[in-house]
Image (cartoon, rainbow, N blue to C red; front, side, top):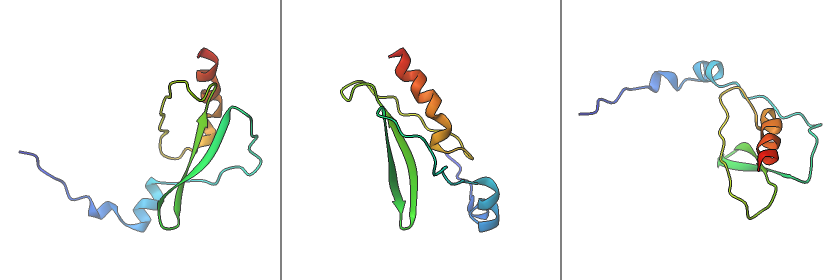
Length: 86
């Protein structure tokens, strides 16, 4: 039997500010031809950023989720590394 925990105590503004600390994207982020940037709406007034790094549009895709406190541009170099190895 699965026992479910009640995590409602964590769903408080003060707790959420401490646990989740998104920061704004640098407006001077360099664009390039091998990356598409997009915003994904998750609820009213809330969007998450995503980047699609590609060499060929018909190539296989790796979906990578970063951790808390990071933003998608923190991984621009990693996307380029995957492109370099094919």
